Length: 47
Image 1 (spheres, rainbow, N blue to C red):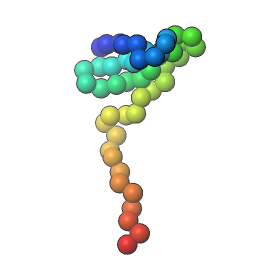
Image 2: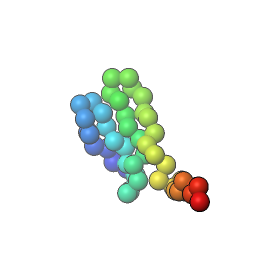
Image 3: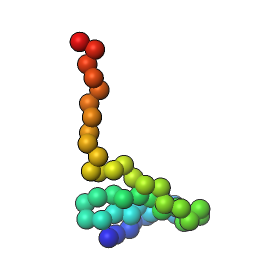
Image 4: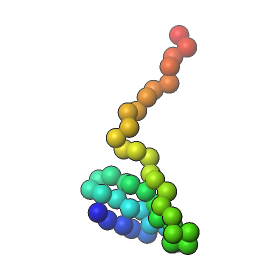
């Protein structure tokens, strides 16, 4: 588990090689990062 400041009072929360979310010191809230385990879907071809 690790944290590092990425902007003024905004912290990136990570576990191993995965970014979990961003903690905002002022609002005391965590916004989740993109799910690293979610399947990546490609747009459908119109052809």
